Length: 131
Image (tube, rainbow, N blue to C red; front, side, top):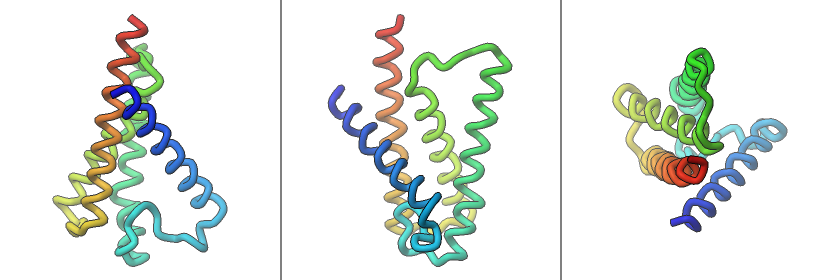
């Protein structure tokens, strides 16, 4: 399980880093983000506005709330878990409101659920090592 957690987090980190570089420097050449190659540009803009940005803001609100309560994350994996969980929540809401149920969108949800699971398992392991 430790190797699965390690390799999954390395893969997710590399993927996120590559996507960040593409979004920063090559956005005009690659306007469609993530795995949603079946989306039109309008659908992708709506997806960004209604799923990605709310996930970012939910994560931001959570960490501001934790700071105001005087609590710190118990492991470095906790923020990754919170971000992926916020993304899962907004994806599920999007499925219920506007997002079409296609193989790409379901694949994105499954990948996000997997990352959430791996981050939670890694957090629990690291938390037990700290205590």
